[in-house]
Amino acid sequence: MISRRRFLIRASLAAAGAAAGVVLTANNPFETPTAEAAPGDELFTYLGRKVVITSSGRGASLTINGRHVHVEYEGGKYLTHLLPFQSFTTVRQLARAVIDGAVEKLFVI
Image 1 (tube, helix red, strand yellow):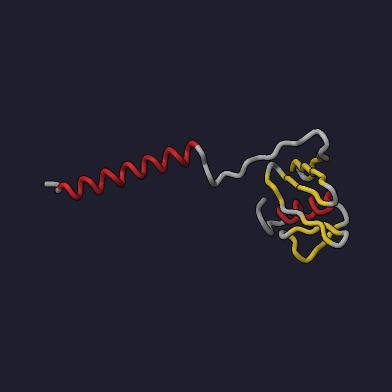
Image 2 (cartoon, helix red, strand yellow):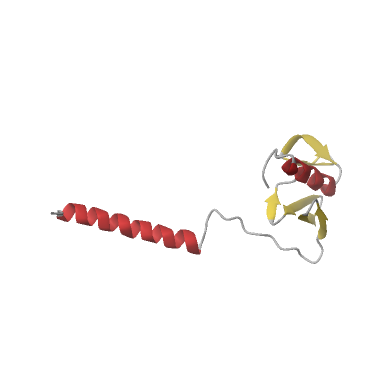
């Protein structure tokens, strides 16, 4: 025979699991939002990957296949944390190097 305490514990665990399932399927917090290209953006494709570069002042924002890649502008060069010991004169060169690194399986983008 099941006790009242076990019934309440199992019912609350089932309710919490059902609520978590609904939240994760409706609003997946682990899914990265995809970025869309704006009218002034630079678009190109490299090794089958769609690249979007958005310029903002001296800095830039880089998106590869809808995934944002962090880019910094320092000392006249563009840098990224994915390739910490390299600097690039243009964001396009940086994007190509990041894609080459992903093809060589250094990291996943």
